[in-house]
Length: 218
Ligand code: URA
Image 1 (cartoon, helix red, strand yellow):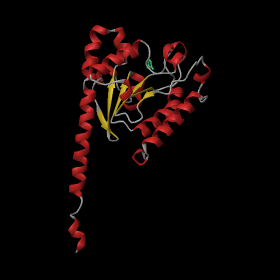
Image 2 (cartoon, rainbow, N blue to C red; image 1 turned 30 degrees about the vertical axis):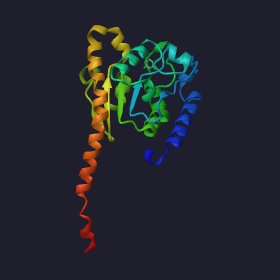
Image 3 (cartoon, rainbow, N blue to C red; image 1 turned 90 degrees about the vertical axis):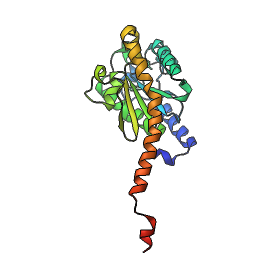
Image 4 (cartoon, protein in one colour; image 1 turned 180 degrees about the horizontal axis):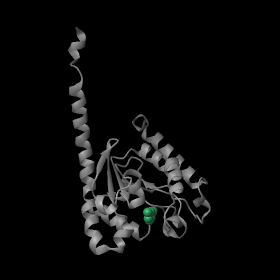
């Protein structure tokens, strides 16, 4: 569906979603001390989309994702792989801050992802989705354990899903998790490159599966 939209139509649709998010009253989080909802930020044609858990104190204040300490680490990791925030799209499972930074509840996750996140994914159509932390991972890798699957991608729906630790978890255990996070992060550009070769081999396979043109002439 996204392939049939112009970049301008995609932009308009994503800005429409952002406006809906800012005015959202679908779940109790809107009335639980929200200053600003945080729809997400970055490129509407990003090849890589990062999905965190939910806004924290600073994100709620600014209306932008990952602007606190976790965001600084994310910027550092992005720069390690030669990427900037403006090239990727960063958002969260839930768009409003859970009070006292508690975990988002199952109903909040279901309501928010169905109303917004899955539509954002459909419109941006990233080649790689990077999940940050267990709530985001749980959307695409149900019942998985982050300690077991971090850095191990799966390919589905024509894209790669890469589960990573949450930057806040890395900040709490830098000695052990930072080297693992760096190694996992280096996979991101590799997956973007693999996406292109998977596309061309899929195209070649479907072309060779088609009957030769001249057979239809006789
Ligand atoms: N942690 C998250 O999961 N998301 C943010 O936007 C900030 C911190």
